[in-house]
Image (cartoon, rainbow, N blue to C red; front, side, top):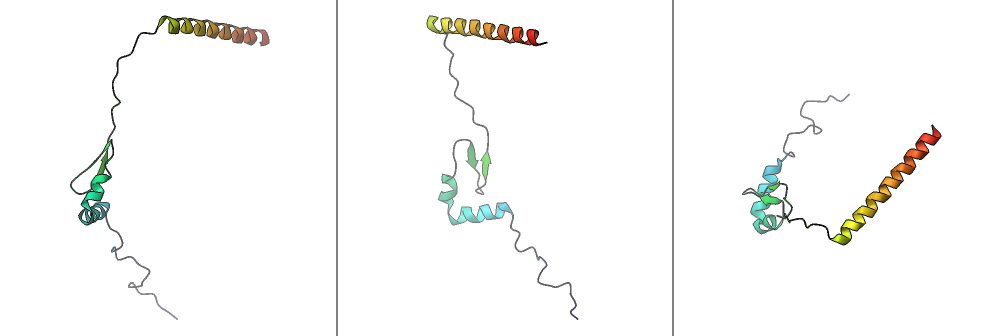
Amino acid sequence: MTHLNSESKSGSDGSELIPAEVQANIRHHDDSQHTQSVAIPGTTVDDEGLINNFATEPKVYPSTYPSPRQQRQYLFLGAGAMVFVAILLGIAFSVS
């Protein structure tokens, strides 16, 4: 008959749990140039080698007024949409 004692090999002593900050710090000291090359737009790397993500703002550009050709296209698209909606409403009323 075997007895299980509290010092069995199946338990955890906590040595396998390494915090992310420690791992990043070890990597940072092993190869400091490698962690700095990870930085891409929208990220920064702090002194410990941890990456911080943030939102990037899009470039702002002024809008342009539509040309007469584009205005005609919008007019035809609007008229086509109104005809499409009228047809759908006609079908809906005829079915009900």
